[in-house]
Image (cartoon, rainbow, N blue to C red; front, side, top):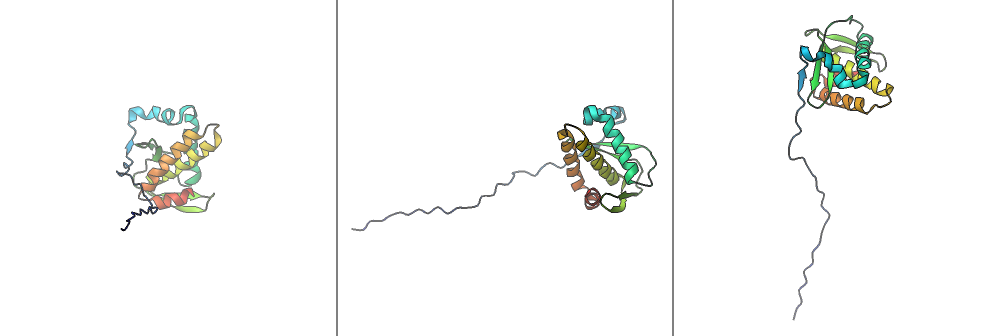
Length: 157
């Protein structure tokens, strides 16, 4: 008489969990004229004047050819925001002495760089930086999808 045994072996198997859906693309929308006064208080709270001043100061510091002008305000579907100089399609020369970057960008990309630098500086100067860290990374995520993403990243490096 023979005895049969059933032997079960369990081998460790790597399991990769993938999202069932693609992440939603980030959508930007221009701030309407009647909402512009609320833009900075909405996104910077009690630091709204600090953020506004820092963005304009940063643009003057990074763009030697910039001498003031109108700005477009943008809100992102991921909670981010930024400003860009309303300079039509003209290229903007930027010089970032802190990291050695020098190059030309579209006004939109220059605004992203300026806003990222300003938000980062503000995050380092307030006692509660979490909100500004969130704003920074939301805008950086948008910058990663931008056609000039590599130049933007070099400028903020």
